[in-house]
Length: 358
Image (cartoon, rainbow, N blue to C red; front, top):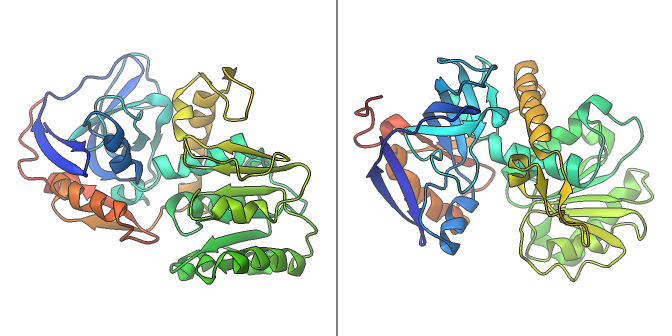
């Protein structure tokens, strides 16, 4: 089969490799569309070249002997385990059964490719890290939430899930894609958008004004889906002095500017492939996270939400050329070309695709 290998640059080469086989708990998926994420070009900068794609959308080709929920021919999307072999930049990819979920007929494959990594990142941040009420325990009390980077896929999914949990007011920080964010929020419940392009002081005062207008005395929760360009510094200035939490999406950064009284964590989507992980809160290492169980539950909730209509895919752009277009798309991600869209790749458009044999 054809597989795209991403190296630093980003530089992408296509290789002919054997079609992988699933182990007892895995699903082999014929990839119809692959999604992409910023980490797809960032990870190869730091290590060996590899197939860095993790957003799978396609049709089940084969399942391991322990898999009970899926069978050949099922329409699915899945989150491939990061850094593991057989990622989504290929004609066939592997995923664990607990990070695979059914796609309703109303959801297209290209839409499905926008969901797995970004939506799960949002879920982990809101519910595992910030401890907010899940959609099945929707809150009945006012719960202000700051979402910094609201037009990106992670931020947008965070807003959608927060809406399902009846979390309001949502204070969305966005830039040139505010028209898109406007469709996600609910002004009648105090939600609002603040333009970060007006400067740091305007962001801080804008959040404070939004809280007053919504009748909220304090805000205790913030999801920083940017984690740079003074985002967490601005958030730190408005969070309540006691009992506040902020979760961030970029590991390895210096977050010492966040005051000690604000509990901060890093939201790492790879935790859904772990039973135990070093907790991102200081001083708590090696605790049981329940990451796999969390992933299992929320990926199935995504299927239900798609079918019911309250959960929707992210806007997307199909990059011409299938895997031949991966290098250009990742370069665009690196250079910040796209806004409020996910790049996806139609695998059958790859030169030489369809020639593989099982």
